[in-house]
Amino acid sequence: MTYRLLRPLLFALDAETAHRLTLRAIAAAPRGAPPASDPRLARHLLGLEFPNPLGLAAGFDKNGEVADAALGLGFGFVEVGTVTPRPQIGNPRPRVFRLPRDHAVINRLGFNNDGFDAVERRLRRRHRGGIVGVNVGANRDSANRAADYTAGVTRFAAIADYLTVNISSPNTPGLRDLQERSALNDLLTRVEEARRAAARPTPILVKIAPDLDDAAVAAIVDATIAAGIDGIIVTNTTVARVGLNETRRAKEEGGLSGRPLFRRSTVILAKARKRAGNRLVLVGVGGVDSAETAWSKIAAGADLIQLYTGMVYAGPRLPARILAGLAERLDRERVASIADVVGSETDRWAAVQP
Ligand SMILES: Cc1cc2nc3c(=O)[nH]c(=O)nc-3n(C[C@H](O)[C@H](O)[C@H](O)COP(=O)(O)O)c2cc1C
Image 1 (cartoon, rainbow, N blue to C red):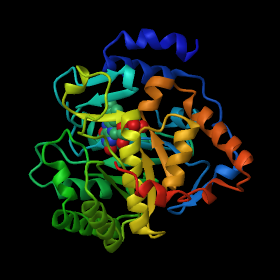
Image 2 (image 1 turned 60 degrees about the vertical axis):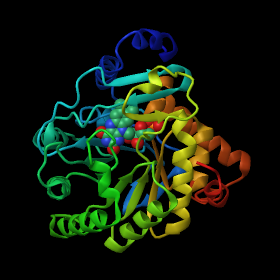
Image 3 (image 1 turned 45 degrees about the vertical axis):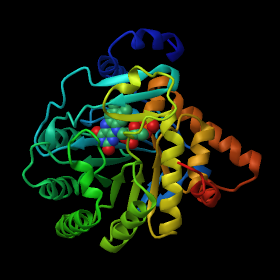
């Protein structure tokens, strides 16, 4: 059945229930080898060979249940998590809301996940290749949040292709304060020490919020470079509510993702790229739901891109469609490879009002 026919059925269910069913359907789908990507879409970054620049963003597969199946949909990489040291049930339900007229989602899940032990066990059972990153966080009631992150680095360094330090969820009170200058310097120094002590020098990215002013973005870029961290994922969901059609749903507390996040997250990305030059790997995420938005994100300065909410509205064929669209556009614009597109419009995007 095509997703167009299935979607009304899924949308009749609570968003979280629909997501559980989606995970089961993806996991149960027949597995062939992942589809081959157009070689012009490949990127060599972080010491890894990405077959294409499009990844599945964190939160879709919080517990590492469908990483191989998601790679089978065409994604060039999958980010599992956020995982916290101890399992957590998260906030009371309902806690995920669709805004169909905005092609958006609001969530206040609050890091519901199975915890390090269960997710590590699951990832160790994988037997296929493909790039899988692990996004780590802190327990809500943790007495020492920095220690939760360093424990994540230590625990997953050997089995993750890269690690993400997620300090930008709006749903764990106080978490985003870790983006502030002195807290961030301290955290990143400790994370870097944990990486050096780990079995393998796994690449590390920091994931930031879109709700930051120019000075904060510049400070985070500088701190990331100074600490020797490899890159930044730009961005998580926003607490802002601008220009939404679904005014009733818009009042739900939590982080907003999808189409209305595209512009804001892309402007922050361009500003981070301007500041970082080529010293960091930047992953652009927020509102990518077509080949056009994917291309714009890359042109604004993203080496790699990710999506989540686009899957809710467009379904599991979206990654293949985006990749085909990117390859066609390379033909049309007579550009040799996607790497040549990165940053071609950074200046224009950095000047846009977010
Ligand atoms: C339901 C839901 C759960 C999410 N959970 C996480 C999470 O656990 N960790 C994280 O770093 N980001 C999480 N995100 C944020 C996404 O990874 C992404 O940064 C954001 O949704 C913007 O991308 P999009 O517009 O393509 O969805 C979540 C997003 C949604 C919609």
